[in-house]
Image (cartoon, rainbow, N blue to C red; front, side, top):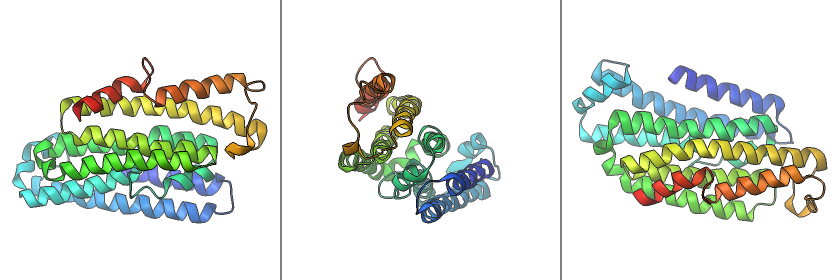
Length: 269
């Protein structure tokens, strides 16, 4: 897991550096690399400690023997995993790499970052925090996880409203949506985990739709500022329909994709 995780981070940084667009590509890539590698080192340390006390690298065997660690050590491991996976999810306040990375990345890489790589942080939390450490070990951090989830929801939404670059608007909305997923996981309940898992899939589909539609608009108009865009309905009706459907889905309107996940997350909360 850690080897392919590292490959994912290095390859994505290479894509940003090699095909990024803008004057600050090198700076943005360096920031992304530092954030990602810091989180990766925390994951390495936490999982290496679990292997050292259990004598196994298999997640199921570690879960069966995790009680060998002291409660304080388990809390420290859980916190390291929370930060390590939280960086990849772009949870506030460790989300600083995401808006700029989305801004400079070419559209295919932007879609990959939003729909495939952000959910990997949520997948890691589900697999290694909930399934390996277990809800009991996470209880000391439950309030922290819930608060970070709510803060990410609100901050991402407000920054999305304040942004004028259409790519940054959708990028900041990802911070908000990851906050929903973190909140669902933080409930430490089956219902919350179900909602978070469903929302991971829904978010990936919705963000792919939104970014591809925005890519069509940027490609045809050469503009990214929302003030410079207008009267698109008569020229790009298909893209506008796709954006409307994606926006409605992101808002959790039934029966679109995010509704069932958000309903479960809020019910669990």
